[in-house]
Image (cartoon, rainbow, N blue to C red; front, side, top):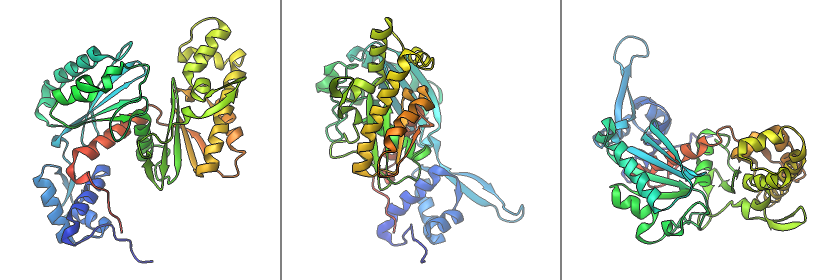
Length: 386
């Protein structure tokens, strides 16, 4: 079999080759020789690419090393952390989280705060807090390259609008007081808004259970429900970014007809538990009550089987080979997962079902990865591989 060529020596492919080099350096430090071999490029071409990227401040000489301990040392390159910082703002679960990292995706700062509801005053408070953080110490000397805002709900990938979530005031997505407009007016950097579950599947593809998986689905079950899809090794959002919204699937359960979210989300399970046992539960208390294997145990397991039946439909239609379940529902443990699998195993198509190992970390990993993609001009086009 002929050796697959990833890089190209022709001048028209310089941008693509730059991108390929950057993608490699996002994973490891490499010498020029190692990069040339890995990408099937000539040493002269690689030297020219590295010189250009060094000049733009995107990469740096990381260290030098002699493999034999004698003679000329090999120079190793890495992304330059001083090229810029990125900000991830997560607005969900009645708390906001701020994460600041460099383009090597090394976390420089973390902060979170509990809130009751998102309104204009909270967003301005968040902006002010970010300005205070960025004005201190070393962060004040590094350019801000990108801001990504992760939100629950269906974010239109074309307009950036969010279908209204109960946690947000309506005004935050329209006009001069929209979240994006407020951030754009106060920071000299591109601002983007993304659905948090779509970011989570990017995180799973990069560092989790869906790494090197071609066709898969992420199912998120927490206070709300949602999902995201991978086809042919790439995230698939659909025409407007709404693909995978499993919580909106119609179903019949316990004598009622409604959306799956109304039966199987943690929010609905907490409401059921309050009606059944007479007091309000948080998620941790709900899990503790479930593990007693008493009144709630059978009901929650039935909702797991309901989830399994809906996933079986998806497996039959889309023929996905892997499904990862994320969100705090994983706290229910193996009994819950077993009930889901009892239904999915009835499919004619084989599909591996498992809990996420990253859980909440996947959203941050995905957000940082996408933000870096948008921070480096060379990554704005798709990688070409021949």
